[in-house]
Length: 596
Image: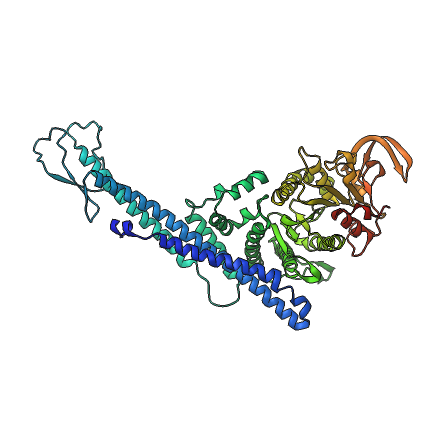
């Protein structure tokens, strides 16, 4: 049991100095990871071929993962040491205050923590009592405090007992704190080797949970804004010290990574921790199910569904496999930095809740001159993210080529729960109305970090049901933080006229392939809007009255753009007029939009 003298003399700044050292290592590891991802990995694509290229890419990915792991684990050590120092300093202050009070009263604190005091002469002495010194020990059931109504009591005794008790409490608090943190610090270690394994990442998840539990008094989750506006989030973030920001990042990465309105580099760093840990957790769950059985088997009656596969799937097999495929697509985009000039990727949102969500940017939106946010539609989720991520890579390519002197950022936003079936889910409006506030918050967050509405030209691209969500966001009260809206294959935007959208009629652009049946299906589902007007086909009227319109209708009033692709998913075909028109709007080169 430590003594009060040891607590009094402890140099607790040494813990803070050690925390600073671990913080430096954590920050350097994160900076090194960024350098590997953004500078070192890119030349491999142009200087290496074949097996050499594959091996080099594997080494760079492993190195990046190692630095990511170091960043997280060293950050946890730093936070633990800082929290330990803060709690011990608090106990030390309470001890010192008790010692100061004893000195002011000219009481003597003994080595065992008892307090020697002169017996008071202010009150008549009790029968049989003698003058001199008394000794007060901690733990008195009812200290003789002044004014307690005990006429024969000694006020000095009450004061001495109070001081002795405070000394005991300070020492006990320090001992409890030391014991609590000692175990955590012993467990914050990693095995030797260069490979960061899934087991190590799972251990990091447990470490994070233990550190959160232990440091709740020092750094609580409750202080992180929840449900606040992007401007309020930014104000909270700016009010923190740099050390506090770093500690929140490594201790609560999911919460920080989801905060609209704070710098994208911070969200990216935090979400990469979440991604790595989620990948390990999902892989562990999948491994626990055993190998995937054959989906079908041949019986005397023909080919039938394998009951073993059905059981495997019911336990989450297909879900976990899909989630891992989505995470693989994100990693593939990370690895693609530098290929054909593709800029660094920023992971602005990620989770595996429900169908899973991912928000991935090509380039840093905080400094972009032109920004495009793509909202995919029905069946979009983490498991199918590869195609949506690829589309925005292609839009970045086409837009960047139209504005080579400006910085461009294109973002895949799977940040809402999209309908997962055409019937009945895609025929319902609530998905759009539930997703609209999330989209608006994200757009406002971009505008906040960019420096205001004039800092970047922002285009919102909605495909299929994603355009319905864009419509819900644009008709919501307030200002849509975007300059242009582009929709492709839209089933309807819940409004009857382009002028009903917040960006204004002249900044609404629509594409629809001749063989894309979704716009017609959207009318059947009632996802369009209604207006009094005349419907025309190439200017020839064919219907009038209270009509339902979708963006590809002439009566809707949007800029209809030429389409040279077919089907509902072909609008992003490389070198097509369809993607070229989208890029022209993103780059603000309206004069290069091709009319139908």
